[in-house]
Length: 288
Image 1 (cartoon, rainbow, N blue to C red):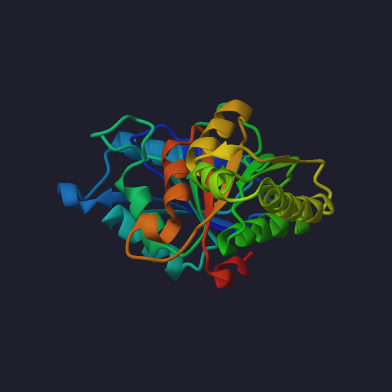
Image 2 (cartoon, rainbow, N blue to C red; image 1 turned 120 degrees about the vertical axis):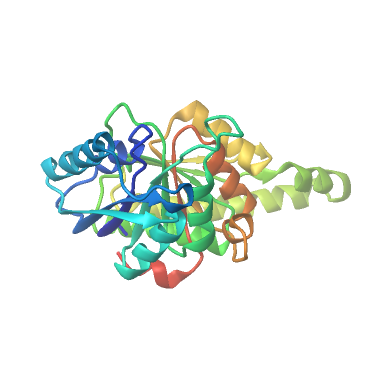
């Protein structure tokens, strides 16, 4: 998944994308396409000299780290150009900053990343601030709901570990028992049935953790809280500070919420750390 990367940068905002992908191993990444799109909807056709210097600096940082980088500046609608270039260049991962929507608080992401999530069937990494310089894959939090999307996310992480594309030191598997479901069970089901359901899910989570630990990852933790999935995932991110949260997309549809899933979309919007969303299409995961 990390072999070929399209890194979309917004040269007017802080460089979360460069700060995160520069922590990858240049020997494991074949090529990075560094893309900036001049938004034609605002009547602009060229970048200023200052903006050009910012873009060249981003290029230099990656090049000096040893990455093979193709700089690319295009004019168009940002999300369309990002998706089109990712297809044209057959990249295996799109990396973008969270951006922001001026109508909302700064931690909400902007139109570009939401539309990329809606339109692209590739894994998408939404980058947040990384001042520590730690490897973006060093400490992973994975939201697990035992859906096809969750299994695809686990498969993607295992592929990265097996091929040694990044050094993963810790993985935390988080499965949230839906509070509404638990409340219904408590009201209508016998305690033995509830205990049996929890035991089955616990065993499935342990099986996942065992398959991950076999790959040489030093620490694999399990967390099983009760609550609303998105809220519990965000709370865990705030409390544990993972370098990256990985979530499987939940379906397909004509909007980001339908395609990605409400939980994944909300986590990507509100997470204080970077988030990677893995698509449901298995074919995309084969491109490593």
